[in-house]
Length: 505
Image (tube, one colour):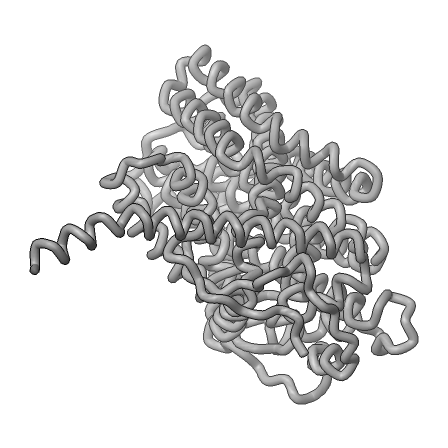
């Protein structure tokens, strides 16, 4: 028997969706039905089918085409200007003095090295200093953006100065809007770190994928350096860099989410069987998770990686802004329209889909929809809406990217002051991807914990009873808050209904 029972939802809640909720999560009775637990065990076997094959083909074709383009553009300026006679096709776009690929490629290499060091430092400090590092990410990012804004204005880069100033302001407003949620967020992150730190194989997988990303970055930066060194005008350079940056973002997201699926499968197995050393653990679970992540489920990972990150970020920003509007009914109505539109997209594109992919091998949309319906039917969505762990990890990723970009800007300014913005902006993306590969290990554990709590709280209670009690208490508080807000809305609308009834009589 599932210990989570439902009760009617209120008209309005802090997560912005109409859900059912557990009546008393804090006093949930824990089921000891081991058969229920075994039914949730990941489907490791020959029964899995290839999912979202179309997007797998698109991603692989994109890698081939982009790889060829990067190689050609890099070789064209390597040790000799216009080695492949490409300039004859770009005569009308020529607007700058052409350089060589090797003028910029070492700078990208240094930026990649900085990003790799930051990512590995995060993995090494994961067990002992992770909490301090996450607090630094939250509080330092605002200051760092403000300092960058000041330096940009000092260097007469007005556009970038304004952009960093706006970013700093938005970051500050977001922190203020969620300051009361940070203690619970840090609690969840601490437990997630404790979980993955006991799985050394997971840490090694993250390092392996970071090496794979560095190999792709070697080719990507070679082609990007060729673009920056080319004789095409600034407009043409920027368009090519934008196209290659979108490609890099997709590739990086795919690698991060592949790690996400592998780690989610491992964490779920550990929670089901009661520990990594349990006798009931399947043989070579990491190898099996890795095999399915890069074969039958890889198409779903490619598909979800296109949209999930952007929709998640938009949802966080709208949620923070929505909570600070107050009683401005007109503005609240407009924001609610956008918010519910984003919520609809979240139903089909959410990070919890990767846990379902790891466990059951479903397609991405099927996994995302099932995960969201599971949260709504059990009320755990209210707890997820209160948690900001994804945003905190994103702040750490942004900070790592900005530090990498700053190093690239300082080095580029010495010899190529007219290429500073191009080198800096692309280096930020490189740094974010490399640091994100380390951050995704913790995020995978967080998402798996929530899926397990929704599936059967016994999994969390058996793993950490104290943490289970804290989660249940917080969930109970959020449900009470939701109920009180719903009552306020009903009371506010009741006089209007009374007037309408009187008029009709």
